Amino acid sequence: MRRQPPIWHFAAVYETRLVLNERLVIAVPPVKVEVITGPAYMFRLSNDRAVVPLMGKVGEEVEIPSPPAIDLEAGKRYIIVSTRTNENPAVVEEECRRVVDRMIGIIGLLSSPTLFALPIYVGWVSATPSTPLNTKAMFSKPEQLNRAALEKGVSIARRVLARDPAMRDRFDLVARLFSRTMGSPPTDEAFLWAWTCLEVFPMMGTQKHRHIAPYLAKLTGDDEAALAARLDIRGLYILRSKLVHSGHLGLGDTELYRSLTILRGIVCTVMRGMCGLPYDGELERVVQLREQPTVIPV
Image (cartoon, rainbow, N blue to C red; front, side, top):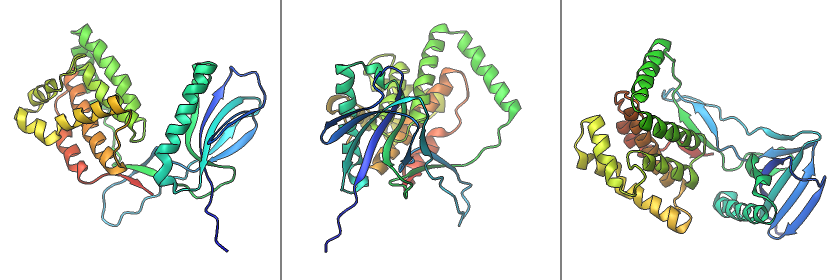
């Protein structure tokens, strides 16, 4: 007798204070929209924000944390938008995410987008504890923070930004956007947020990506043309255009992480220049990391 493939569930879970229904189920295959009132439990099967310390020693063993359960608290109301599949989760995850996001957009238009203002989790779920699926981990070397060096750097950055209120405003916006891209797993959205940082500065609200290499060359002392080629700034711009015009990058995990790694490194370097901090070699590091991706599906 042929064994049936397992059924996997992909869901977006939101807390809401704006729905009066204690319980509601809307079935619109292949998506189901549920309103429930806690208490209840769900179990994450995805862990795309695991940050693992890695010293870089040969033969080093690391522990990748398991995704925690989702505790839906008593008395609180939740919206769960889900779809299911019997195909390989690693292959169909992006399509499942798009189907769920599409339904969230439609329901928001038919009711209120603020219903989905309090996200809790998006990913694979189970009613019982199970082995994690398609987990990704970011490996990074731990650092010993130096209070004196940090205080000195903060003093320099504040002083430089205080002299130019317009630059300070741009820096504040870039810092908010960059925080979002660093707090996100490698996704199309993370790429777009990182590129938007560069549109704020040094592109200054234009579509002229040619402004990026001259600014980086001024900070690093490198040849402008060589820098643009090594970082493939034009290629990053083409990816940004593809994302905006077609709605997706269409990159595999490794390709996306390589591109996002370089883009984040460019933004870090630009931000240091904006607030007067010296260049720290970040661009050389990210170009090397492009050949050695540090986000690994597990």
